Length: 140
Image (cartoon, rainbow, N blue to C red; front, side):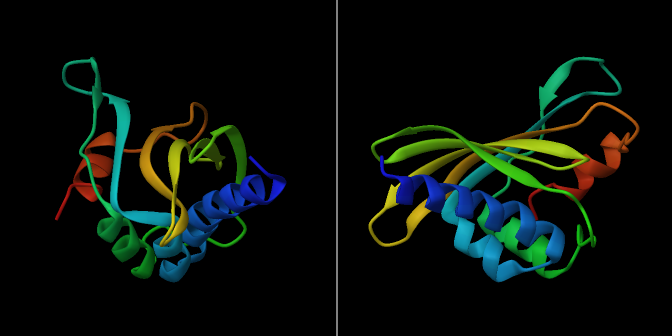
């Protein structure tokens, strides 16, 4: 892979995470493949077991971004490219609240796009209401 590809993968990951917190749906849409799958891993408060939370797609993320549901000024975000092989890549985005692991693929018609994402809350001071998170992220 070329340095240009690595920079494009990083830019795609930054469009995803910065677009999210800056309430910029056009950046989010540019980062995501239309068939994106996203899920989260958490500990179920009732059973205590680690489970996979509801799956959602690109349109849900774009809509939430447009609605400004996570818009917050000054959030420190970052992205790193972890792996690249021909037309596949993996990246990680981070912020104070959660981290995402992203699978990206190169498409002739789109360029680099995120096709899969899995995320988890960070440990530490910020403790989300898991029931709220499950309802908030439910596919609608």
